[in-house]
Length: 123
Image (cartoon, rainbow, N blue to C red; front, side):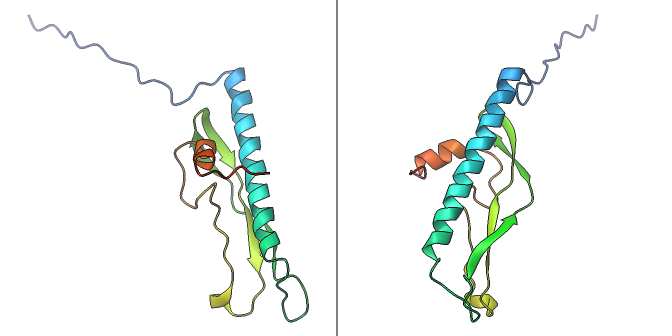
């Protein structure tokens, strides 16, 4: 008389994998990348008059941080955040850049919504 009446509930997928969702993820990736580039450009422009001992611009662009995945409202998106280099000889006096759009440890949450809520999209 022991009859098992438990029904297995399938765990929903973490994100939808269809062509439209992929287009939305590509758009989110592009939007986040553009916003990060603009943010870095504005940051470097704040320090454009700083020069090192050889007369070169002290705060310069220095490639990208390793690519990482963040969870957005349209699914996971891979993002490469740009970085800077401060040529100051004294390491304790170097200027460090930390993105307000993509904080160092942000992995979950909507980045675009975070940026909009902080009023970061200005032209």
